[in-house]
Length: 115
Length: 113
Image 1 (cartoon, one colour):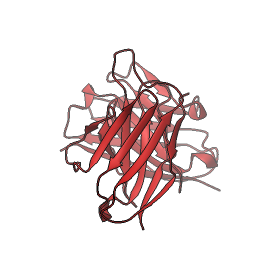
Image 2 (cartoon, one colour):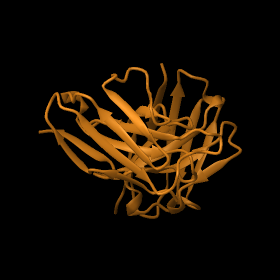
Image 3 (spheres, helix red, strand yellow):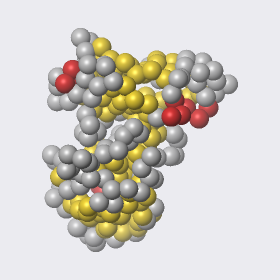
Image 4 (tube, one colour):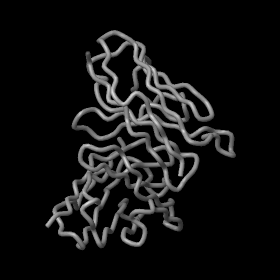
């Protein structure tokens, strides 16, 4: 059974940093593109970043470029999102999702940016 | 960026009646490889998103056959033949043809009348 489990969410002050993780199981992690998608409270879904199977290609939505870094550790079946210079508008539930077609999603991790 | 526009934004439906959700893209979603990468995502209240339909009309495993997707180019439709209580939630279309970024529609909130 495919499982994606996010962790690392929490409350952080504006300008602070946080690192999210997504633990993958039930499939060959190294064979799939992986994504981060976020959802602000009461709002819709917004794609944030994606990373190729071997980590050689990474893409970001403009609003997080230069602040967020996506990475993966295929040996540990783990996806990460390092978030720096956080802003109030980054407050959201962050989901990891699998594959070019977003076929599996995790349960999400809540990030709250507030003083 | 490709803009995805859904309508209606709110859809009250009587149990057992059909529902039709529309999604339009600002440019054709036909990829150079010939595929059209348009997905439908369901998000029930308090739950994570779940993919229902991929590449316009392919139902995911476990998705009831009352759900069907259709369309081409820039116009797409998700139909529910007979709405059940468990279908309540928000439905998003999203495109995977022109990226970055991948883009989602605003969502259609389906509720029981």
